[in-house]
Image (tube, rainbow, N blue to C red):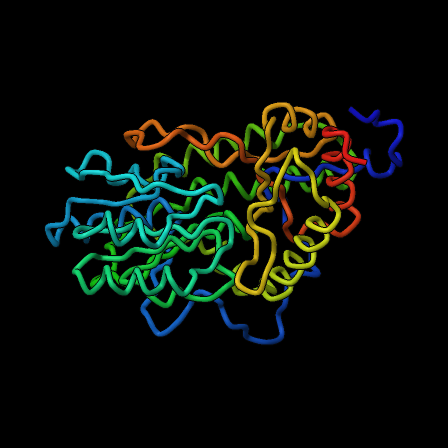
Length: 362
């Protein structure tokens, strides 16, 4: 392994990269003109506190129609299927390839009825073959629900009966998710209290922003983020998105945030270069704006720990499912690199240098 002393120190030392969002910078706020929200179209859109609540709304409506068979990618986050777990649904996993994509031919050969929860991961748009497969499934009577969480900047999915997303995964909001295609709006609870998760996450984001601004390595914000996440997990009944997040969403310069992600994803891809030790599975392209740059690596645990030592925090999407019966070996050699609006080319070069140092790439 190449010694880190052989690399420029500015590339191996710097501010924290990754983990939960802090408060958004003012340069990403606008106030003088309306903006187009990429995921909104002519469909009636319902904003709730979380993607989990959006899925719960979809599950309730589909169950009311008599549906009870759900097809999902065999590689997923359990939060995507937890609303279906105890409500009489049969869950069927669809295999994914080395790019974590369900092959269109598998869609056609394995799905003939019920509901498909379609999940274009990590910023991909659907290929022409996938879109044609989805159209065929709809002609068969399959209900197509698209989870747009990883591709909210790319516009509404063109083949879908219902669409859902968690907005706070890619945007610096305190809470938020949406659902479309519901025949009726979920009934909000009477006297809905202020969202505890939004209040906690806002406090955590403020605490983190303050620490980063003064170079303080205090981690007081971590406990607050954990409490906010717990509040999100247990609050599953649909409730309106908090007023704080609605106001912030109206002010976010979404196009500028999208453009920064694109610039960062290109810079990081180029800086990483080629290696026989890792591979970028979702490089930026005309039909792909990465949510994260995802590496297939032969040593994910080692790389993740090495990056943590350099204050670079990269999630692994996802831990082994506890809810879905296994249909293939769990893909456990992927790690996600942050490329969001908080960072610039210098941060991308630093992250690439650390990865190259770990693998001994010259």
